[in-house]
Image (cartoon, rainbow, N blue to C red; front, side, top):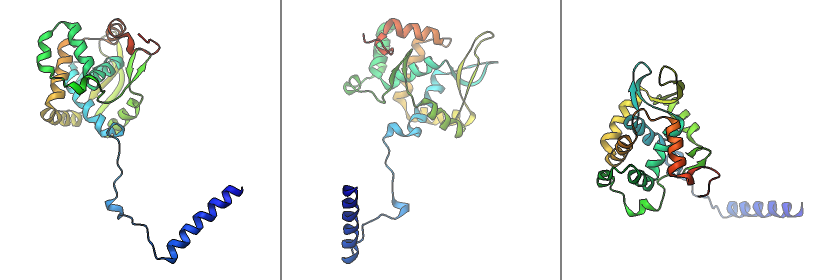
Length: 217
């Protein structure tokens, strides 16, 4: 209690001195105050990339998908992982033996050492624990639809689809982000349209076991 009392006395003395000397802390007007966010904590930053990813790596498949859709939670997160960690996309190209794709990857030296945006190891591969909040944000902005639905007559999966507005914005992003677009097209070139979650899970376990939670290889 004594320490608490001394702290309060010090605070009161500070403000008394301010008042006696007519000292006023400088404060920017409310309209000029800016809250600075780490880009990785900005949902617009993630929505921007995810819209483009669905547009390029997603498919239209009537009667199941009327708009560009990525089906499969693990497939989506692994594709996003390859954009965030381009040095793993380089490894994927090596394993695919489609070596001509190296010519258009154009990876920089710093991209072989740092993640563009960090993810975590999860039970079946890389994951971002913020996805749920990011998806909810994008749904509220009418950019995507997320649901568990059929991708074939007998199989269902977690599906992320562009809305009309999402498609419109993704096309604008595609014109701007040439590098991202190229890298996403590389992913589409390596993995076929009918790639499933099960295939991706087995692919990661076989080729990149270090990405699985609990596996330290």
